[in-house]
Length: 296
Image 1 (cartoon, one colour):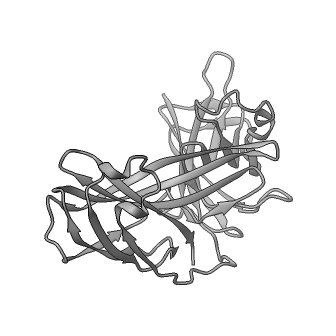
Image 2: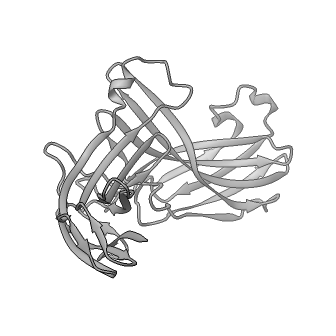
Image 3: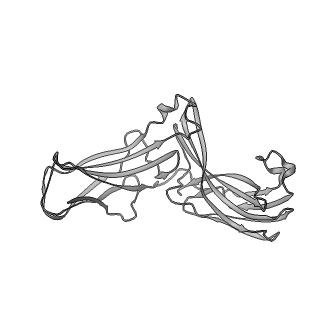
């Protein structure tokens, strides 16, 4: 029996460009272990894919959807030989630098855009024994960003007349919701805050929710596929709320599923917030606000 593991020195696994990724490769074996060498590979990739509705729209997409390699570093950590019985730890250090002409974007786990960084080790063995592999993800955050978060207050008033996504406005009950979002340009480590007031509403309210949405765009000069998907939904009011009472808005941005707003030649990642009022008959109205997220 033999086993491979990777242990990074940093417990939180968060790194910035220019850091050194240090750790140990751990080889566990019961009895002496013969091998043909151990290789460590560190890589960073952007993987893009199309939603089902976009596939087939543009032939040109298929060239722009190839994985984008941001980082690749290979290292021999052990030459062919034997390991003794028990645990053997082999230290390694790898500088965190992008490939020439590339940028290390922040780690981001999306639906159609995925930015991921991995350390992978592989032990080659003789023909009769299966090669051993192990990989671990590490997280990249920006050191600094040119664009700092500047407070941009959003005051909003939602009435049947302001709705843009409703065809038959005469069927919408009369209502007026006012409030504000403290800023549409936010530090990703700080919460989204604000407040909301239902001034009047003819129909009974069932729920008020705030919804965080990612808008991922993939493509090239010939065309783009843009898809919005929900990241999280937080209920801020339950039932037919008292009128003219301030309801706080508070949302923390989830790690890995959000990143600083990003725009490149081949893909974009943007974020929006929806304020959703659900009536007792399950009809709902929603108002959308774009957000700009930064690291600092």
